[in-house]
Length: 81
Image (tube, rainbow, N blue to C red; front, side, top):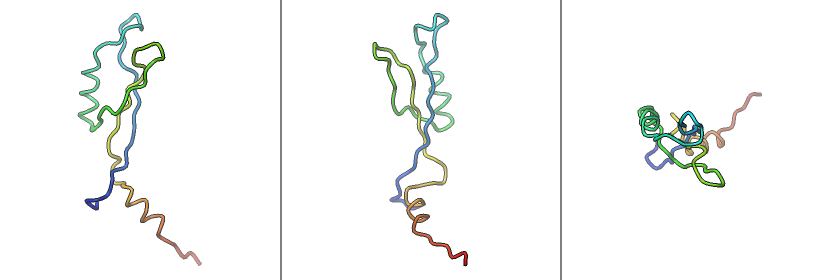
């Protein structure tokens, strides 16, 4: 991998854990720590219009693919004749 190549990201969207009433979110620390152990990091939240978090957006570098790799693949021509 070229040191100047920007990483490509893969994303995962999860709902924060909820209390049994489904109206109050529980502390997501354990779920975030579990995801972090697999290389995921919190990137953003998607909130309800009236307040509260609807989704947690996680990201991690996509394995083995960079923007440079994509550009090189686009430049490669094949001659099947």
